[in-house]
Amino acid sequence: MATEWEGKSRGSVLGYKIFVFCIKKIGLYSAYFVLFFVALYFCFFAKNSTQAIYYYFRKRRNYSKLKSVLCIYKSYYVFGQTIIDKIAISSGLRDKFTYNFDGIEQLKSILKAKKGGVLISAHVGNFEIAEYFLNELEENVAISLLTTDTEHSDIKAYIESVTNKSSIKFIIIKDDLSHIFEINAALSRNEIICITGDRYVKDTKSLSYTLLGKEAKFPAGPFLLGSRLKVPVIFVYVMKETSKHYHLYARTADVKQRDVEGLLKSYTESLEWILNKYPLQWFNYFNFWNDLKD
Image (cartoon, rainbow, N blue to C red):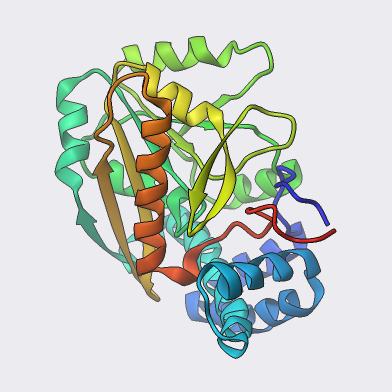
């Protein structure tokens, strides 16, 4: 099996069309109902991801074998819910959901300083709906998402065709490092740069640190940027709590400038904290700790 994340997530256009039909024609809970069967399918037919998430529950969380197996299904189901919710919220059903803001004053302070800022998140919860939180803080919040742009273009095109246009701008990471100029330009306009720090891609620069008791590789980029840019760095997570309720957490990274290791340490501690609160919402379905046999 692949030992690193390959840059693309599973899924098909047909699957998304089924969920969109349910959401728009029948209702959100009908999509959740269909998801019961989809999650079960993945348990049996997504061998690599199932093996990886079992390892997370069994070895990193020290759950019993039975509990680990049950949590595999629960994890797939909650992950599917976050995808459905993202489609629903971006299709105009935002008012159907409720939200808690935890540490929101830290985000407000960034905007008031008008120097821009860096938000580092992870593939936990539903970070992709963060823009709907941030847009409530100030009318002119501008968000730029740093991405590799490797996801399936046909799925992206379909989702864009059935949802409202996102206000998020995308900065594509390029081999010639020209994205650095785009980042600096965005920060000079008091924009917020968003990036995830928990998916290392093969043949890119990485850093190693311990997460949940085992050393793992992290992409170097987010921590090099966050430690070198003279702007605040905040860890942000948007976690699902009930069917229609989300909780946003924001925590400022208290580290010295150019202290890359310190920022990574602070990030892993923050990530462990959020995973201990929401253990089912770890959505890295690959050999994250590089501890599985091929």
